Amino acid sequence: MKAGFIGLGAMGSNMARNVAKAGLLKAVWNRTALVAEVLSQELNVNFASTPAELALQADVVLTCVSADEDLLGVIDAMLPGLSPGSIVIDHSTVSADTAREVAVKVHSRNAAFLDAPVSGGVEGAKNGTLAIMVGGSIESLNQAKTVLEAMSSRIVHMGDVGAGQATKAVNQIMCAGINQAVTEALAFGAAQGLDLEKVIDIVGKGAAGNWFLDKRGSSMTSGTFTPGFKLALHHKDLKICLEMAEKLGMDLPITQMTLHEYAQLIREGYGDEDISALYRLKLK
Image (cartoon, rainbow, N blue to C red):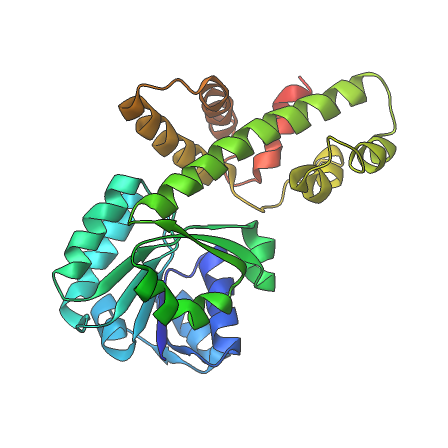
């Protein structure tokens, strides 16, 4: 099975490296061509000049881009090269409605589509330990599973197209709440003059322990906010979550508060920092 990868940012480039390590990567494409050229040389795979050229070379096309409009543009550019029977798997975080729109486009070429957003951050992308939540045909998932296994430690089929993105929205809402709780609690500890390394150590071993505290607690309290997961991207994702909730008639107050605070941090120039930069506001 030959795979092609489109979208070589911090997540996509590392995911592509793991697909290459498994001997499955045939070609790469990126909007900034130089990025794809450099990675193609590093991995000894083909550099595609267009998404359609990449699709012609691959049985499975993997995409990982920043926003709904980016994904739709890439898919439109890819379609002329998409062969019947091929599988397109999108790892971006977009709305469930966008995933369904993409599926219609891909199916028009007699190809299959899976929406398969990921969780685990840059560390998970580098280490090949991402969690992948998949919407679409179980038969297509089984056909492409070898490619997905090269990037992940957990793959779960969630249902029809759109279910992967709906599950990712749950993940992003939960991350917002955890970020709020951890940053607020550590700022509270700092205000009391506690040794925060000791706080993180002991609290992290009890009922309040979590991935975010373990991976980001020490860095944020030392003033380091290297992504990770960029705050501006989580802001984008949470806007999608609110739009989905509005259609369901639901309120998401913690998500709304996080969006407001992220917007303030973005205005102050911290949008490219890790989401743990929320700690900056809690200390004020």
